Figure (tube, rainbow, N blue to C red):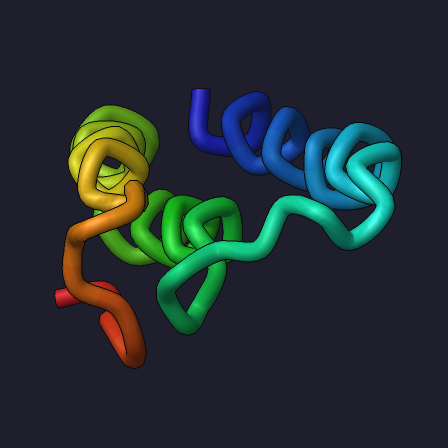
Amino acid sequence: MKKIALLLIKFYQNGISPLFGGRAVCRFYPSCSEYTKQAIEKYGAFRGTWLGLKRILRCRPGSSFGYDPVP
């Protein structure tokens, strides 16, 4: 399950994200997809995906921004 999740994120980072042509910029560092990847590597597919989803929901105008590492 972990390998599949990481493969999907890699596909997004290399195949889908570049199609936005630089218009989509994450408010956080690391980016939301990189954060999710790191969370899955550290905590496994289920908890890592959950942390990534919570992060993506925080990534919107009017919210905080800046350095936000995986706990």
